[in-house]
Image (cartoon, rainbow, N blue to C red; front, top):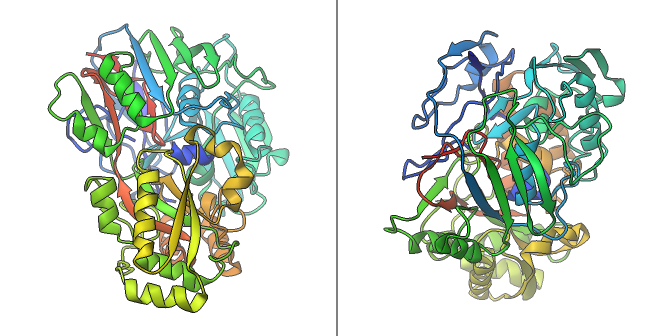
Length: 551
């Protein structure tokens, strides 16, 4: 069998808030989270590449490469055989409200389970997008119509072929969802045409030159046409669902008839553990084999332990560490107060104390290290005196910060934030919330004046489409000016990649100066495991074991 593979650079969530919670990049320090070959894939707008080894880093194509590359695929050699068999036990954050309905999912464990049961049109892996069920996703000249062509031979677990009707139904579920409806607002699914079993033509309500990465690349899990029996999911993915219990976990078994590269592991056992320290302790005691998202302190505590390994992911898939100030609630409806907060925090102290130095400084905008990032904006420097003057002039002497350890250190960073605000004359009360249920109450998340938060570090265009502007599904800062909305719509409609990236940088300048997003660091995500788990990758921070094996 020959494998055909192509790559798409990130050019632009938790695609629900947890996918925001919730790559193939590696820091090279004992990491096994490396690039893996997916199913046969292609696109008319991407450059071809040969498949890397598990240890090789694959350079992302430039914007010019993407815009001008020919639509040809390169055949690569059959990968060497890997050891088959074995069970892998994975612990991740979960909640009693977990569901396997893709349109309603909000948690890391749920997403990881779903990515193994269901294939997607396209997967975001670190700083790039890789086609999976789609052979190609192509726009017309002005991006008012897109054509999806499916790969041949893909079948669901019950033997049914994956068809264009299944794609239309699945995208319709997401479009009707409160979690993803805004992301699909420009997609006119009602006007779509099923040309044949493998071809779907979708018109746009407004031009979307970034449809592949900003919409399909965030979530495009495919289920059978008409399927609604969530918890007994039938997908086309490399693993089949055996059992699922919300808040407890899930058991998956290898799909022996998988249409793509066959998975090596026999079973995947997902275990719900909300607390990062408890996940690490379970790994230490041998109760699990892989712990999602441990703290920097936890990672430091197992350095030198030959029975455990840490895996760090930077760039796309790393974590944006920050605080979110709600511009629609006092006192942050006053721009001077927002500026005062940004001047009062000591970013380097937060990195040194909370992350133990394991991070890069943030500058109040997303996407550092990814296409579209605006590195021409001067770094915000701490200025406590000016912050105190601004707080005093606005009459602000106190506010409350809500925090939960959605990832390790959010509570600690909020408490250090409170100490730093005190130096500027403001008393901050930190209210600690339950991480397992934090996103069960969306009304509270969207109405909280200030909260500790993190995001997956996505390309700027993708991030802004979901988390900023009046159409942003998870715009919890409330930033949505007419000028930003108009600029975002113009950027999204731009087909030429270079032009789109330039417009993206201009929009990031608006985010930096006007938004209530306070980004103090970019932190490599840290996962831990027993030794010998090879070829693990991350899909928007969720561990993906389709090509993994036990060495």
